[in-house]
Length: 133
Image 1: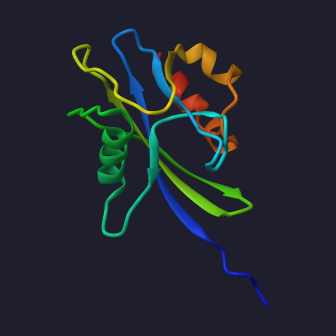
Image 2: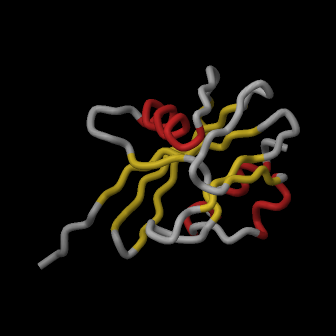
């Protein structure tokens, strides 16, 4: 008998500032992939598009609202908890905005990203992010 596979839809956002640095959030200890650096984002809710989820998650996690959104990639990664389907977006943060986040957050150069402790799934699309340099 086959075991049912848990499918999780996730929107992730590559946020860049005017210096082309990438915003990462430090994941807390009590969540999937604890103590890793990750892009803002999260689960897609019922009747929500991937982009709507991205916009909602970015606002909830950072208080950032942006106008221009670009689809960058889609990919799938299997974790023991199930199959995760990711939709990756890109947006630019206005220099007049301020990040309000309960999580530790930092800006990293694109060249630093491969050196960071990140969820395995995030490493899959680093080549797409390198194109943003």
